[in-house]
Image 1 (cartoon, rainbow, N blue to C red):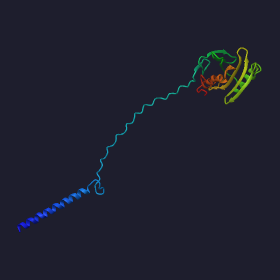
Image 2 (tube, rainbow, N blue to C red):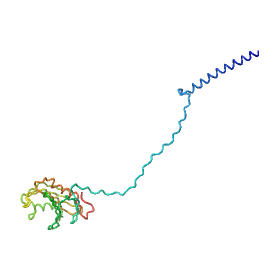
Image 3 (cartoon, helix red, strand yellow):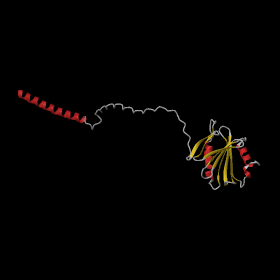
Image 4 (tube, helix red, strand yellow):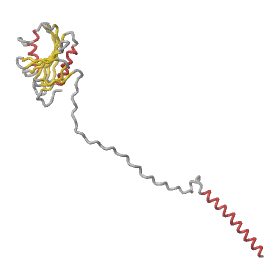
Length: 224
């Protein structure tokens, strides 16, 4: 009976060992990485906060500066002693004579006979002044030899006449006579002249620059 008891005990231990191996195998299978239904997902590590991008320093605000006026190529800005400023071609020479009512300033080209002439007016409007200069029976330039008007134009505060005539000393000439009210309220004439065989656009170019830059000395705001 003692041997039978011992065999029974050994058999029971062997069965238990076999069952224990099967349970372990099942537990390994249920926890494999390719069984997502039962495996607990690992808790991801909380990422550390990324460093804030460095903000570039804001440079101190400097006082605003008024842009310097643009200059046309080939021109200089002249502060004329008569009391105004304007752009004139580089190399042109200045001269002055006393007119009947005001000083008359000339800027002369050294080479091709072109010229600017500037003087103040006493008439009430630019149109009145130009009409008188053209048609006055005593000194109107319509009485000059070969006079022929080429173009007329008027606008708010200005009047202009383009004409040709025959000068006794210089030959055939063309003139653009522009009369206008300046920024200080004074009326002025700027006359551009040149030989008739010079393209009219070249005669007008110095006038355009002068008008765009003309500024009376005491004007708070210059005409554009």
